[in-house]
Length: 327
Length: 268
Ligand SMILES: Cc1cc2nc3c(=O)[nH]c(=O)nc-3n(C[C@H](O)[C@H](O)[C@H](O)COP(=O)(O)OP(=O)(O)OC[C@H]3O[C@@H](n4cnc5c(N)ncnc54)[C@H](O)[C@@H]3O)c2cc1C
Ligand SMILES: Nc1ncnc2c1ncn2[C@@H]1O[C@H](COP(=O)(O)O)[C@@H](O)[C@H]1O
Image (tube, rainbow over all chains, first blue to last red; front, side):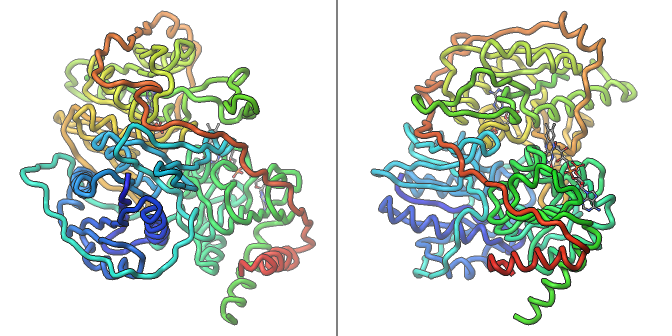
């Protein structure tokens, strides 16, 4: 494995911070392996993103503004990625550990006969061989997993695990040739937007999560959203809140939900059951608001404030907004 | 229509995990093996589909649900749980030679076994609780050579075509595809049912067929010989200690405590 390929996840040319985290890691790894760092951007808006990507230390930015990528599910993207990987030769492919990243990673693992590592938070090159660090078994064990017997390694990286460092190195751009004679069967009939698309929960630097203590759907909008906005973060939830139908399941954090690793997590009216904890325990700082001082959250939160969330949260929002206005 | 649900057996996430300081391996004794929580949703999704197809007017042959797992022989008991939920039968791919399989090797072996079992639709979970990779469903679709419709929160079959609502970060997509196919589900598919007493009794009489590695006639090595990854190290994660617990006298004071703390940490 010599070159490093970054899959750029985006929506109509809008990408997220994790892309730049991956690009920064790609540079470091490519230098250690003696190869190139290459990015792949596909679908509507790809071309517009190329310019933005040039601000990062990549050698090649390959793109295909092909409507098939958005019209058909996964297959065209897999074909393009395989084509880029095969022309690069033995390489490491980096994808974000998101729903789409995992979908593509599995497909590439088979197509390239690759070694795969998922939910990776550290990656090292040791004597030419690549090893990935990732929390397993609900974060109770941290494994270092080395690649062997394979020309390709496919890695999904947990967002917010690495810092993104800008610095263009004059990347070449290249249009990827459309694979010939392919027809695709999985058709995306339509897209339905339910949540506002400003920021993915997994990538948000600040997560404000609400639980059963919120008492209903309305306080998520009236209390948590403004606090999240004040921080430039996103709203998440416990399973109790998602099961009650107060928020979409997509916002659930934990064992059967999303894993988040923000700089700051604030849990509001959440008890901190083990199944919730496994989805947020790697947050930089954990703060909790709960009327009960004996909840499990108190065993691992950096700060637990015991009190009524309905009076504390609005005051906190005011303080954060004021600080922001003054900055 | 034959629906096959691929399930993984994982160590109970809620049990304490211990690493043997000598062997650097996970101590597995005393840790209960359970159905991967996501896969309970896969079973639920398959059973719902079977029931809807049976209720549909003019439905032809009844749908069946087979549960499949690649796991050690001891997995039988866990498969009974899936049968008790309502699956019709189960198949266990089990062989000492499969030990140490990674994502690639698992998908390669499971795909061969599923072809042998036969299916119109394969249903999987989205993510296994132990390894956290989520790579198997996509790799399976490739090796089975069928469409892989992922992250479904609703599955419909009409005129031999599949239609799913595929969850995205901001909502969902309606995606259609031909069958045979593979579908992975999210938990929005519906809360897994509990096994009824009748279900539990009935499960005892249902068959669990086993398949060995030799029967698959694979042309590539699987298990630890064929795996493309190897675990070099296992370590305990950094411990998160108990932090401060502060009683708030009122809302403003509670908010101030948080604000001051975040300021100290340079987070505001
Ligand atoms: C297989 C499995 C998988 C699971 N997966 C997940 C998962 O992915 N994510 C997840 O979160 N859970 C998951 N769970 C569920 C988990 O065990 C807990 O039941 C759940 O996390 C509890 O949610 P909660 O903390 O919001 O609710 P509760 O435990 O009911 O806590 C609500 C808290 O709100 C506080 N509160 C109430 N009113 C106020 C107020 N006015 N002001 C301040 N505080 C208040 C209460 O004191 C209480 O501590 C899973 C369970 C199982 C069995
Ligand atoms: N050994 C296995 N046997 C059957 N199905 C599996 C196995 N491993 C993984 N799967 C399926 O693949 C999904 C994702 O698992 P993973 O890719 O390991 O995270 C699971 O939810 C199962 O449906």
